Image 1 (cartoon, rainbow, N blue to C red):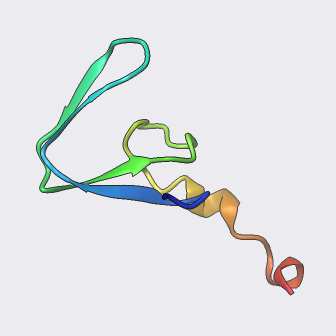
Image 2: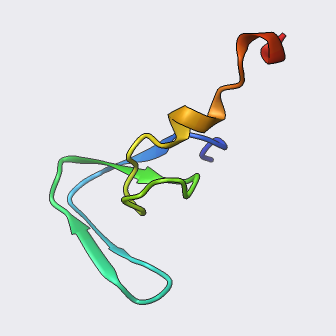
Length: 61
C-alpha cells in the first residue's frame, strides 16, 4: 500500500487510462506514478510532494 507521500514505482512501459478516459503512455523502464495528486505532470510524479510534505524540524519532535 502506498504511503501518503511520494510516488509508486512500477515497471514500464505503462499505459494509463485516467478517469476522464484520457490515455497516457510512458516507455520508460521504471515509471514513478503520483499518489499525492500534487504533480503538474499527473499521473506521473514530478517530486512536488517534497516541497510540501516534510514538516519543519521543530514540528517533527
